[in-house]
Figure (cartoon, helix red, strand yellow):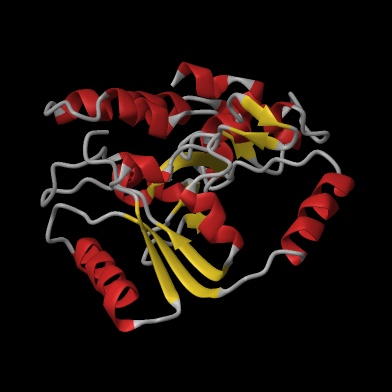
Length: 248
């Protein structure tokens, strides 16, 4: 993951405005932006909100394949234990604290029925925190959904307009496209993917399916600017991208 830390979490530069940004680097990107926030204060009594720069997703990634759930949970427990001792916590018991998670909500909601992920969001202290997360749990009261990072990071209005002008001139001949791969499990998410893929392949003349299990299709390579995915998106009115790496 080290190369993705370049350019304040955007990753390696490809061309102006375009970077090889990893989809799970939101924690780093937000932290780097927060360091330059104009309204920061070192006096916590003046703060309207307290940002917690803990990289929960990257920490979980270190223990992704370990069966020892205690090791996965350790950093999160240490974090809330430390926060409770801070003077900033005592005023509102953490209700004015927030943090960013660069992975989906499910990765931090391990319960007795599952062995996946950590239990960070289920800790008693976490119920007072606000989580800005990718793919939030719809039943959670303290999670707020934010988008995945993209490859496109313009620094000026002119760069945005240049890209918009290019898109406006594109001849979009495909109504709907789906870029993704089958899941090996029979989970609900896997069944949904299967239905979408089958309908796109067999039931619709206006849909194009791009199989991301085929490496040559370049689904996860932002430098493949002439890849099938890049080309199919430019010709599509509505598109969805799902990627599943069997060996990640």
